[in-house]
Image 1 (cartoon, one colour):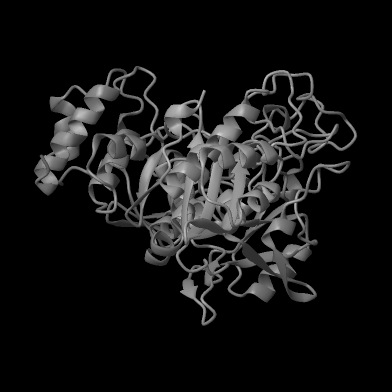
Image 2: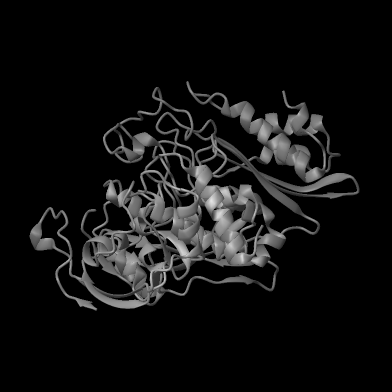
Length: 179
Length: 334
């Protein structure tokens, strides 16, 4: 997909000083996108405003809440604290890329559904992306304490933490044969 | 976020030359820079992305030291076999900091360069000598609890240095290697971060346009053991109220080569050299650890809301020394 429309307008003290656009190639959920984008556009805004991938949410916009979490080359990152330009050439997975093309849910999604691991749902995409990364990372111990610690960058202001934790344990059992 | 130009050079020399051409900021992980650019605390006209410079390797040098590239992420450093094996204090400190997502992005040099978490610095309007020299310090006489220091403060600034990683590096001993317009140079880790004194806006020893290329960790002495204890308001994803990084060995029943550094309580990663001298060559005991811990806080200045950090910091030292020497100390802490 090639998208050559100008990037979303941003604040400029002096319109004549508008920085030049920067060309980036992003592979998102297996599909390659070419964007011509202003240097100050963060990956989260590029996903949401340019590519229509609104699963990743803007909560705090400062890397504190985790609602914007996506996988970049397999690792969880705050897409609000990363310029789209920095992601040039990277392989990105968003929540839209978790389920199979036929609609079969990813084990993490299925477990969140079964455990009712959300209330308002605003943090859920970020929670599931962090959970997916953790369950793919053998260096993170499968103890309650270490899972909670690894998930602490995802805030749920509804307080659904218990069910989120239970869902992750269930998904771990199905993905990795954990208890 | 404010507008800026973006370049991604492929060589260190080019990065430095590009940086020198405008009001610039180097961009590594971006977790500090973009956070602060969004609230106009950092206002670069140009960001120089250094992720293409190949500074992302960890290697053991022939002299036993370990060289860490500027762009090694906090996660990669914490999980590296050399670090887990020879510098547990560093691995523990890194994993106690920030969140998984931030550690995956944040870099070694970026952590060294991270800015203070003082809310008056970050709000953009309060008097702050660090952000707006000469304007005053709203924290002195303000709400000065979590992110404020009791050691190394001045009447101009009392913001605590926020890093865990740097506290471990201070305890290990390290050298910061930089490249600049005038070539490379090495800065001892203890001399890299500056006390606020009368010029809190100057936070480190870097000259204009200089770029950190790597940090080299001293070789630990034979038989050394090390660890990091972080005390905070909640169990994860929180800055230290007080922390202690310690490295030492015990030979023939006495402590050798003790190194202690403190976090959360000081305006820079804080070597407790008086405490180290008191411990060296002595038989571990609760009484000795209490003496050393008291010495570490000699000259501390308590502010209205953070006086608790002095006993908390002392207890962090006592508990960590107890853990490293096998003495039970926690139950006796009163």
